[in-house]
Image (cartoon, rainbow, N blue to C red; front, side, top):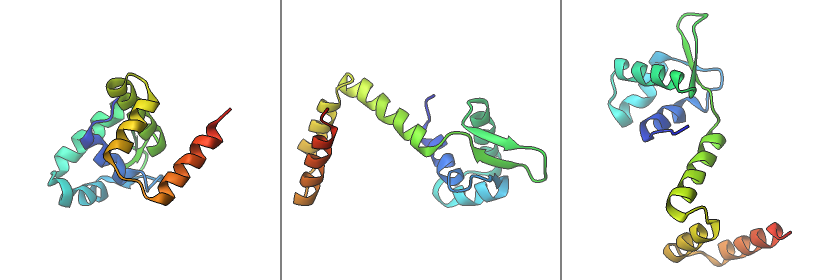
Length: 121
């Protein structure tokens, strides 16, 4: 399941509220950052439901919209997609690229070494 940047924005609003939110609350939460109208948000939520990203509780009024997938699941899929698409599945190449481009503090280097040591089988 591919999650677009705009769908990710919607999910960021829904993830903290597992009980779901009414449409008005979702619209309000997205308005400042996106400028989306009520109809645009509703269109996203409806499409996301058909993709299995959102559930819509229609048993009450107003309907409540909730994330159907966890942030961790989406993040894992994004990482895997990046790894496969850009680094041909090589986690080592991915880590090396980040380390070449970003400076690590001494503490971060120590934590990375420990993590790698702990991963040894």
